[in-house]
Image (cartoon, rainbow over all chains, first blue to last red):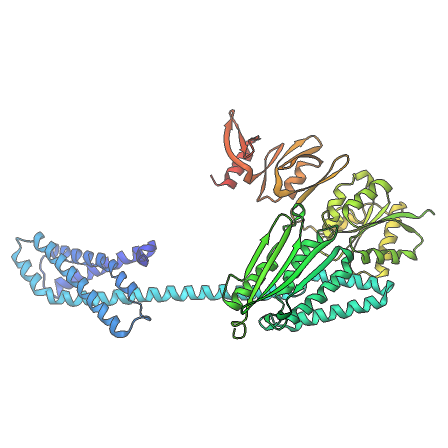
Length: 355
Length: 252
């Protein structure tokens, strides 16, 4: 990761300006406290030493970056920074001394003065180090804080969205209103069938409303609800809807998330029956493998009349629910040909008892 | 007075039964035909020329609106929409529909709608009465076309917009070039410009709308104009402003 000071222009400028101020202060200091008589010498000395530290200071970012305050033990932290500060100050002093002793090699008085002030300079060097790393750690802390706030707000939005879509996906309003219209019609033609449909619809709604999506239920239960739904659609569409079931007798007691099959079946009905003028077949199949329940749902569709609108949202929801529930993303498989669509959902059993 | 001829176009049997049942006691109209889908509906309208249709919107293969596109304006009957979807109301009133019945609807509501239709058909109500409703609702139709229906002499073609390569203006018609051939439809370029998804289609010239992902390369042509070479080799004239927008859309 790049040094944050170099990443933002305003930071770079502030950093450079701060060093100019420090250079100015150290010039004043060398004249009034350390009795350097020549202004030229004092300015040159201070500019060179401080410019060098400013450059080395950029590099000090790396030991800070690789010595995380939270992930390292305190001893580790201290050792790392002792080593890197010694290195930084050593390098600084050596370079500074080298440059200045070449620059002022005739000026014996200055060289003596330079020697005398070395301990002070070393002290100041370590102080700069502490100041710089404190700054860097503050920057990291602030950045992490900002990231965290952003992530949290994103997460909140995501949770809200999924809650909303789960509410919406529970009951399709068009299905509901169309069913009510069928009932309205049946009350005039065949009150017994109307009553049967009202009961089916009520049971279906009750199951959809009472089950929380996180809870696991038996395949038997889910299948019963699917049957109610299909019975209702069968009354609406008559011969146009044909359902075949191939259920493994051992699969009834196995578990799966409640209401996971509903969107899948609805999808099959939507692309099969809603868009077909003739008979449309839907196949529901269950298989039991070792510690695994597989449910397959297949339907026919007409590619030329495929409606894109909202396509796949229901299925995407199913996939992400399975991924969250079982922490696996290999549980859904889709097989598509020009006129058939089949989705296979697999529900692990050992994990399911302990989600 | 002679009874008004009406056709029911509705894919669910119980939906048709309900309308028939409601009509039984009305002596103003009679049902001359029941249709299960848009194709049957278009045929029945052309053959029987009813004055009124009860039209469902969501139907397999050809929805209610698409079916209406197949009917010549001069032969268009009065329309009462019956649907469980409320989002098509604006579109319905823009077609000058008499009423928009949301399923399930009561017999009173239904009878009101039929009475309005009877008045309008017998000439006692102004024909533009409901248009004001659509003007009040200024919200445009945001749903983009997903398929285009074209009627030729003896058959109906439904072209998914994905298969369209480009469109060419031809007087009062638009020629639609798709991967399965070409079809002539009575429509304006403006209609397509407004109703095709602008992310996929672009009007590059007075006479041309192209599917953007079909463009293979752009070449200068003459002094002020350009041509777009499509993937199938067709060269399409592009106007100056069309070239500018196309360049933006294609990011170069």
